[in-house]
Image (cartoon, rainbow, N blue to C red; front, side):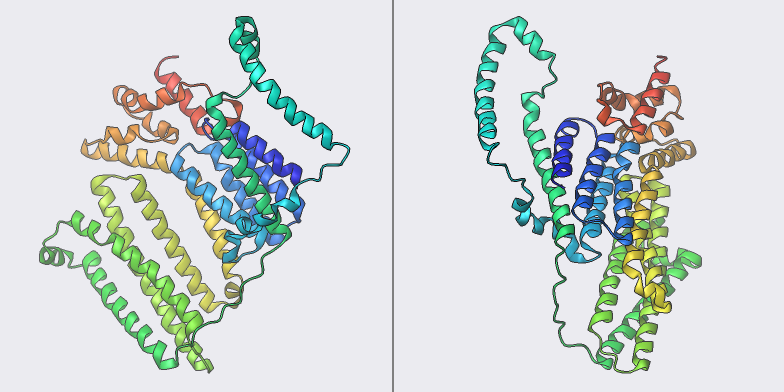
Length: 438
């Protein structure tokens, strides 16, 4: 555990600061996983979570878009914490909480080696200032010292930060796996009686049903009258309510969670009624999400696709999948028993699919297709996309292609170490070389 954690920290300090992310991230992730595995071997379910976490970390080798990589690495850390501490909410904080036992992971120095360790520290303190003086005093010595691959002074703070953060992460995960945190005992407040929960849920279902009825009228017939009444253009109408509908759908999850834990169901008929009311709410919410997605797609057709719109579209689809899972849990006992694991694995698989689908490339393709249809092209937005978008941008005419790829050409002209190897950037360099005739 100690050796793997230290190796992960040293690899992070060597590979990550000051360089584009690439295969070095996967190396660090594998070493962190090894530290946790050495502390306590994982069970079958935890092994699935750990494998998905490593797959998400490996997206740094495939994708170049920073926003996609940030999502993948955040999800990888969450899944790694759950793999170490169990599928519980407290697992996300377990590695940080368990760092208070980090002193137990420190190797004990044998008494016979203590003088040697102190001598090495004192020797280092002596060598550094004298070495700096000799380096500045003699050009030949300075040239010799430049052949030694030492890090620059400017990179030392970043390397020290990477070392500290990754060492803490590796030790925290290992200690969380070795010393699981017990689930806190929660005292639930007074449960709502049958009438106290049945009436609010029925009223909420009725409100959702009325809204859904209007959506069918707007999108499947009679929408011109509604738009004339509202005084909005179709694009304005499509944009106006998307975020409100998304927020309403997300809040519905809180209502369902509260109904599951805070309602009193003394008899079987009460459980059937609750399940029916919540099932109807899930179905109606799926229609609300479909309306929100349709609004967003209409707006994208009019004004193009951006990262924020694609992210919102994906979040709406994830919410829809979650409500489908809730419906399945209400109908199938097996889905209820494995609800948390299905939700975690499904979310991780969805994020992996999202990353593999090349979001920046999809954005570029959609906007280029819009340019072919309308003649309007936001060139500055194409210029801001990552190397993932280079194959799609290469489909533009030569003049537009060179203009859109110019910022990427500048960024990729710098040499990268092997630890920054990335498939998207390599493919983009090939495209740039072809475009320049090199």
